[in-house]
Length: 301
Image (cartoon, rainbow, N blue to C red; front, side):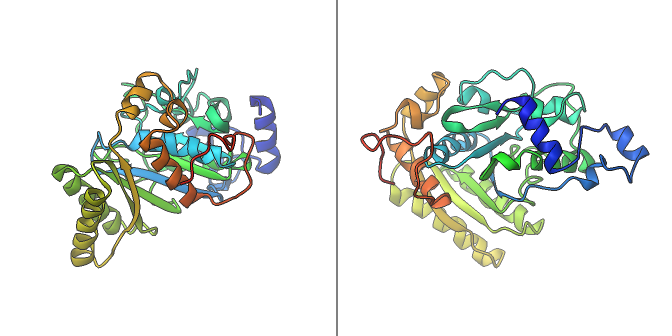
């Protein structure tokens, strides 16, 4: 859907044109006040990790495309302002990004770009030196702006900020599901547990789900997940689910260099199979969508 049609649909669904902070403060009862916008109502999944390098963004990009292959309409949001990379991983070249939305220069409908397999990306700009700080007000406006796009989405995936950012858990709190991505390395295990603990202490309502990335074997991945679950059970009284593993696969960085998701660049690779298995857990609609693979190329998850 082009930008004009998307904006018109948003206006019909919820009368919330772009508004600056000054306007919002001056007109607290106006129809365009952000408080009158609604948060997303479709299922929202936040993807987080305890440290950088765990493969969080690769998981977000490939999971979105794998879901698109299953017929889901996916809105993929890059909320990692410090190291935004989803546009590169998907081979896209957006003219605008979320920085322009947060600063009030653009409406969110003006920055979205279509991606592969019917995925729609809301891009971010990595490490912009003059980017606005996401205080509580701006974060809430941004979250509700995302809600304006939900009419064309079945699922919303949010690639959250890195664990070293103060915004690391900000988009986990309103999510329906939180995927915590970790590897089998000992420091990463420790940081993943630290993130689970932080989510628990901040009373994030959705219990996190563990995904072990870059695993040498299924046994190694399950052992890592069970250790995190045991620590959480003992010290937090809560136990995250284990949702599976993505194996170490040289095809993933190769696809990254090609600026293409591994599920499309190397669809038969072990990592692509694992991403599709996770997509099957999240989206069980059996009817293939416009972007579904032909039967001869599809892999059973």
